[in-house]
Length: 229
Image (cartoon, rainbow, N blue to C red; front, side, top):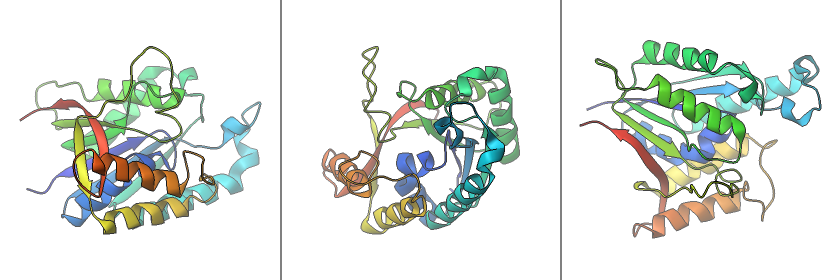
């Protein structure tokens, strides 16, 4: 049965790093994939946030996001304007409400979003907001909630002893990895050279490792937050 799937990410490129190959696979299988990105993804590089000084760069990043969404077959992508790496300065309810609005619009049955103990504060805020928005009240559309890893954030967290230990794997083929890499190449301003964890080579190596963990060539790994059958 065709599903409506929503990926909710903090920043442009998180959605592809976290589940780009899986979105490509699910889109190829006929499911309706949508993307919501909450923060603008640039102004954390400034001492004091000045969005107006980054209008051109933000426009270029939005174009990159839309191109990457096309590569993985997403039906839609929406980019919001929460402050980059400052989402802990926003009232949590304001974040929850925009997510709830998107859920009401799409009625997705499956959600992909961030792991709750990433190093990046925005990833943690988004995780908490999504979990709250997806609380299983009667009649809620979301039946599957999965948390993804983001290279250069998830594995860099060294606090609390809470680590990413996946229990759900989506096996990927060569075509899905190719689409993921093409989507990441659209984010040329965000990617880095190997051996940085956020490089094409490192991302492919992680997909191979997750695949080898289940006896496959490639995979993306997730933690199941809630699955209702």
